[in-house]
Picture 1: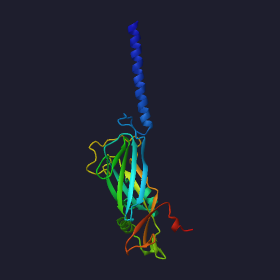
Picture 2: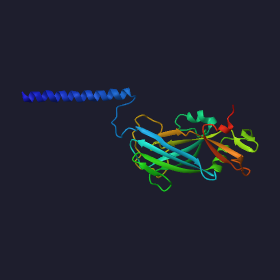
Picture 3: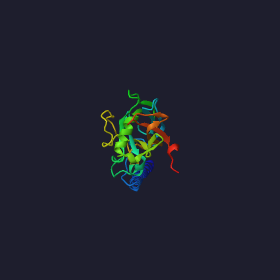
Picture 4: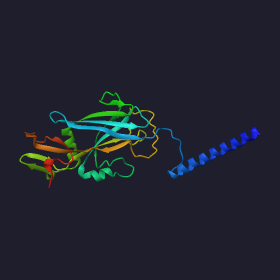
Length: 246
């Protein structure tokens, strides 16, 4: 009698396993693909928790600090890109060609580097889930690069009483690819183990446009006359109050 009860229990468990397997297959099909085991924790958070952009003393550089936080599998290093684009190209920049993270004809890669805790170039681990990155951007080089990239002419310049500026503004974006993205994760010192389960088929770990509008100034800048061919960068969140067109 006891043996018969055991056989019935075993049979019940077998059917339970079969039903669980069938449910997993159906669930996988319903999600658009085959069922798969969960090898890595899901990426529940990936965001910029802090952004600081300011002109350094003298206005010759822009100091940028970003704090990146991630909740999921953590690696000892990532690759971060700083991109720059003209505001007039925003729609094109945000809608890149198929298979591209960004349109290389709509932006400039200002810098790409390792995002690594405790490295010698200004990066430091915030906590178990975060990283910080600091960059210094030469304003003259930025202005010359973006003016050439945007093919700006004298028609794009505005001068009133010696105060000069370009009406179009520059914006920055931060891009962090998955480590397994062979096209964009290219730095040699990235970790050997790059695997991370991308359950949501996201195109990147992070792609964020910063809220700042950068304007190129020349001539009289902040009550001081600059040398011919010299530029300064002024920062606003949104359009500068001094150049609004009503």
